[in-house]
Length: 100
Image 1 (cartoon, rainbow, N blue to C red):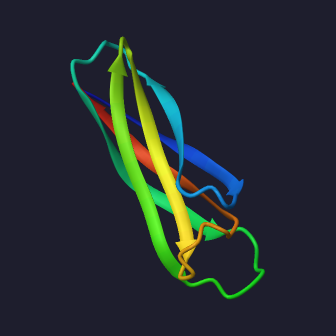
Image 2 (image 1 turned 90 degrees about the horizontal axis):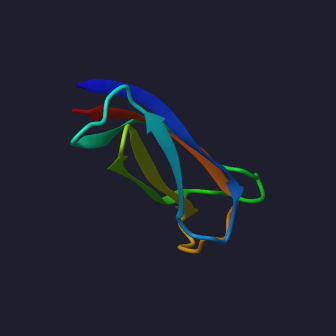
């Protein structure tokens, strides 16, 4: 069993809904299975152009094995109570990969 940690950053963006990005994690041996577990996160509205009240926060992780690498894919989205994806937001998702 191997355990590795990492993070995926989401820079300032608006109007795009939830965004997806990935990080490849190198392992010593080729695993037969792996999972990604969220260990923490940071999220924020990027501008103070109004009163933002958290309406929806979406964070999902997925792991896929490819040889000795595990590709961790994160989906991240933040919006206020207006229900629109019109506010600048940013964040970071921290994770651990457990592979065997």
